[in-house]
Image 1: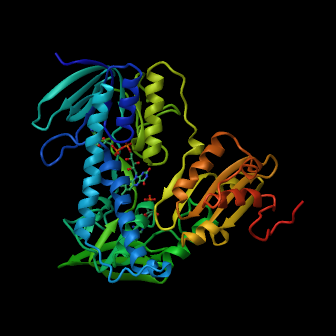
Image 2 (image 1 turned 90 degrees about the vertical axis):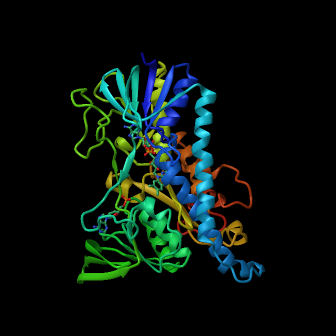
Image 3 (image 1 turned 135 degrees about the vertical axis):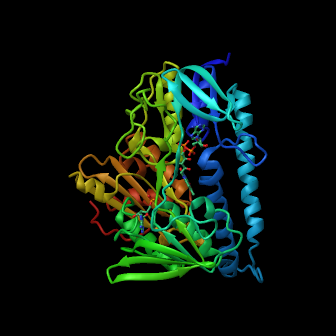
Length: 479
Ligand code: FAD
Ligand code: AMP
């Protein structure tokens, strides 16, 4: 007779493993089921984020950025580095070590918190029952008072560019190239396409990004998106907008890609092609027919604001439900549902989830863009400050970019914070806190920032909302 649990979590990505740890911390008897197995046959926790997402991509972004700095920027600082070369295999081995450390660490965290780790594929077969099939096909049924589905997502595939063994690949394939391809095509100028395109461009690939939409990063504030596009172009990324891929043909060791743009049918040849056209929820087979857990029209598990499905006691979180596909969004939902299951009151502020693109410079934002606010009929006032006027940015050799604050014209409440600049992903936390606390632009303007820091640009942007920036000439008239 298999164990009975208070909570069974299906999936050990950043949604699932966090939910399981929190539930166990709150005294609930908890198990976490994961189907990912390593080459040695043992369970691999961490999901997309730790294995083939956030962490490995950031390891490659950091290494490739340091390479570019050493090759091109060090001389300006007086450092003669000589002939700088990159050993791609070593870079990949370091990335693999980091992934192994982190995924292995989760087993330790489960043990420390008393979470039972179950290897196998989980399926909800009744409102309080999960069947787990192990790698040898043996099925075991577990009872649970509560079930949390955290099955995540997988890359979208498109008929014009079907994946091949090693020429047309998805993001997972692009994290394991053993050398920089000479000509690299990327389909999709979204977050993942721009990050992976940047990695290989820095390491010497000629990168062309084909994006079907006419606008660049429409989810980003338009002033920040415009500046980002200019900076990435300067770095050598050829981003073709309004270019919809319609077909591809692998010929020997290269791939001919067909696309249409405003001039008609076009063709380009690449050595590798990365398909980065988004991700879709991975929900197939996770819940048996008849249990009653509904999906929405796009295949996401239907949940309310507190991640309850249509069946009492069954919750779903992370990439397999509505909202942004981000690791920290999945984790926060994991904490929220564990708290709810333990009988606590819990909710999430979906308006204060930060997003970061880890290009150089980084792009980070939280809350509304100026265009969002205007579309909602909100009258806004804005303040911006360029890093070109920041002493710390000059010292850091990182003067590109700007910080921008959007505030309600009437109440001064901060509606959005948007940054393109070095360390924008770290700086955005102050925007998140400002939104969480309902701060006004004046609150930030009256806050004392350490000098010299990149964050002073956010302070100056807050001052600029009323035309009171100190270290630049204000466009607005001072009152
Ligand atoms: P996942 O991480 O996908 O985990 C789901 C887990 O469930 C998997 O381990 C899967 O094997 C398991 N599973 C599925 N079905 C079953 C089943 N039936 N039984 C047992 N186990 C099952 N997000 C960020 O916030 N920041 C970033 O910088 C970032 N970079 C990214 C870079 C790339 C290249 C990619 C691809 C993604 C990136 N993301 C980033 C997105 C982030 O990885 C996801 O949003 C996050 O992993 C979602 O977490 P999750 O727990 O919902 O799902
Ligand atoms: P994201 O969902 O942020 O990862 O971005 C994926 C991008 O891929 C979107 O901007 C889409 O417009 C783009 N895209 C999807 N299909 C195609 C296609 N056939 N050709 C070019 N771009 C595409």
